Length: 564
Image (cartoon, rainbow, N blue to C red; front, side, top):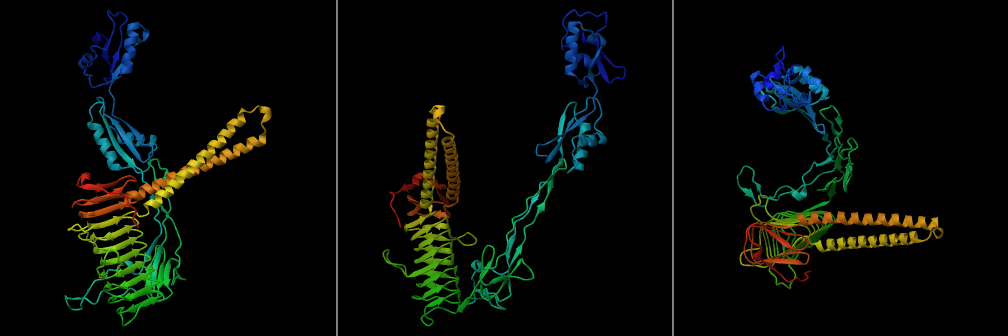
């Protein structure tokens, strides 16, 4: 039936469906046979307009005049292109539909499509050429998508930087120096002491940058955020250069102590050793000992203390850092006796090793080789690990650590008891959280009391209500709701902070954990029964979890007992 209805247009570019006046349909017209008829007309690759075809079938079946006038239902079509810009304006894609017996795209059509989509920035010419080539090779109706333009995100400004111009005493590595003209090491020479003179440059401030604006493919500018700027502040013994406000100079000679945004200069006392011959040392400033601190000696400094050799059974305390080139050694004592070697710092302690000593630091304690049989307390991290992370044993004694513990081996063969407590402030944080939760509950109760009062007030007859009391209730209700909201936000913020601290304040052994190691978080304790591989102990407020290759059955829960 379709063979009598369809015919090729005179120009050969379209197929017309038309009923002749004398035609009468002996049955309902449908789409059946349309493909075969188009193929017979060599129009199988033409674009078939389904909507026009459906309309013609309806017109013909209903005998309407449009069916006798003729309707184009298939035609040749060139490749088409549209441009789709993503919501954020950072990517523009060209969507190409393959030609139906027509030609591929022309350059002018691609340019026009970009113009109609208002794409003006970040255009990739190579991608446009690819679109041009692909449009000629696509099958009829095949879709091809190609990103052709990309916006540029803004480069936000960098925060200001404070660059030390002198070595950091706390990061100084005390090590034997090579003798001149020789391959041998001088075991007495552990490097020069870091000092500065008056007028020396000690820190430079690099101002924050404004950043570089970005743009979308539509040409809209994306503003960049400038970096944060703070001023360079003079510290103890330093001053701002009169010629350059971003330069910090030493106003006195001494030992440079690098802080976050400034530098302090401490008076420095240099001694060969501290022994019976020198007597006890108490110095307002920093102390540098090129040799050892002998047994029984007492050393105090308001600044830092640097010891090139050993601290042996001495009492050494500093408000600043304590750096020990070799080791910290105490004599063996019973559990009831005090340690013979005491080292306390108001900042950090750093040494190669420590044995049978009492170590206290408000910040970090870092031992490179080992810490054996010590009583350790520090406010931040305890690290027993060398720079290559290939050795560092923490065994015996007790360690109470404010934040995290990291070592290579935890415990030692022979089942020497080792007690480690991480996140020592856990109990304090838990109490603070409970206090904030109680405050939130109290705020909720106060709000409910106001709501009940409001309900009682509204139940009164209108003539018994007064505007003054209504205003008072409304004011109290608003204040109570504000207080409740603040209390809730305080709980949420503190909970997030608490959870974040629990996540990072762990006990990590990078190689082995031996038996008889007790790990403690708050009131919870667990003890290993035998040696295991690399492990991380963490706490989730309820249980101590161990991430390792061994089973949880290897952990024996202990009865909770308060420890000092």
